[in-house]
Image (cartoon, rainbow, N blue to C red):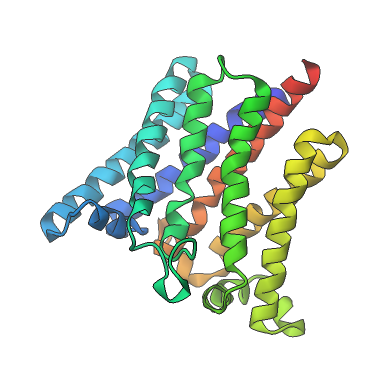
Length: 275
């Protein structure tokens, strides 16, 4: 089981990055255009070239992820690639384009919802680069950070009318969640999802200290990201064509990274208990 927990995160990162690379090569942007705009890139030709470069970077990460499944020496290059890849979009959060002015700006996040998911890759990179020098407990909290952050941030946004309306097209197609609209209004359904997100992150945080709550916390958080992945099958707007993600599909597939974080937490939790 410990071998499985150590290796599966590489596979999840590889699958997600491979699909994102295909989408970028085929002309999708996945929110990267606003990231480039933060760096002052406006020329259409330059932007297109950077998109292709980004596709090659994601392809490289996918290849290194596959190699890391079998070759230990591939882990460090992968970690460095992940850190560099994630820092470029994350720095764009310092600009104003990702924040919703009508809701007061920061922390009301708009296009940045896809950008903050790169915290997951950043942490995975740091984990794989320093896993031999950091204690299991520190690595557990390190990987909790992106999970807790995204659930707090996007979960909190669920209480706004803008976000409630924004997720309606996704939730209404889901066999797991669409029933909410049969019982509640669009806003109330969104509020309930937001409450679930907040409860999940709190239970997992407590579970890191209280052993009896740990598995429940992991399951609650994992349910969020696994449910998101089902949108790839239920929401027709996830794909442009077979094997080619749309912009929405790119946003959805990134949640595989958080499942990788949870698997890392599980693997180091076992080490921490034995210690």
